Length: 421
Ligand code: AMP
Ligand code: GLY
Image (cartoon, rainbow, N blue to C red; front, side, top):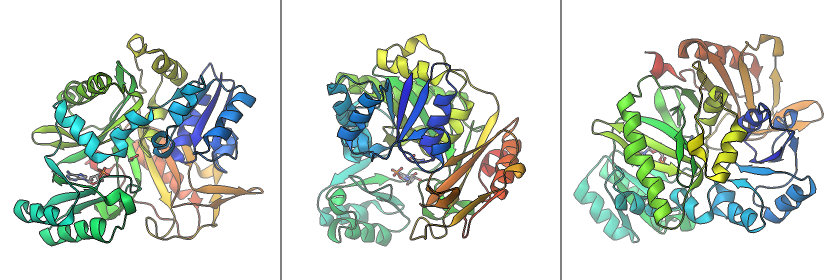
């Protein structure tokens, strides 16, 4: 099989490497990919949202299957576009992807199908929203309804902070039209976890849980990022919680979406808070998480192309996932200044002999110039290591990080620490 991965980050590099492991794969393409992914796939200089050119490439190279990494092409309808042309593609339709694209849409579905989530209200004018916040008090969470590149959420610890957030989003329009509507939500207290599932519209297979580390600094300090590191499995994820996630969250949501006439096919990501009253949904994503994928796929022993084929055919019920019992830890190396402004073009040096065994580097914000790799984004790369225990995987991942350098490199030093204590 020839497979195309759409996207250009660490998640897509992990997808490319997992697909390369398949017995069925003949060639892997990535569009647009990056200077590091080039080592593992044929990178095509086509942007993620350029559907006509992607289709042209699929036809020219006789690609059998396309896998979509990031959310934006999904929201823009890449899956609908490919299917209308009879091409095989993994991901939800534009309609189903609204589960990530609109927070109010996701909330309405959750309420309709009794999926546990924080209480909330939707507002389209600032004054009523401010009134509501004054009644409810803090802590409280203010979210822009539409897409705000992962930055549209303010966890407000005081009423004034919440009011300022409402004003920024609705009056100063810092997220543009994404802030025409806002969702104000109950603050949920607990551990945050990710559970992803392969879904074929009806059946689903749950992946091993993972935990992301969103804040930029150690000890969960500083602004939220796309994710500074991850690990899997999650030792403090109780069995009964996972059963609840399956039975009370994933199953009703997947059934509900089918009933509504927009069945979900692809990768459903549940961002969860483990509250004292059980797991509750913070958000759904319509795709693989980044950097969760970088610790999940290295542990997946089942041939990923068999899974993708079953998603296509609606036969996931015939597959069982097999997992490597080893733990995986991924540490992200980012540019100085990220998630705010940062410089690009720094030379990346990798001291190969110092890389420990069972370590993979997933390239994200990098580009190639002749024989050199240069930084080209906020999250530059991730080092994932496997180990018999989380402790061992963590030590190896940091040994890997220490073998890599670029000017201003920033990484957290406490990834997976929560799971070790
Ligand atoms: P989201 O973009 O919805 O995932 O929100 C970004 C981050 O804000 C989440 O990863 C949580 O850490 C935090 N967050 C979102 N909603 C809530 C909530 N209701 N209670 C507590 N924290 C939240
Ligand atoms: N790691 C969070 C996300 O992919 O949205």
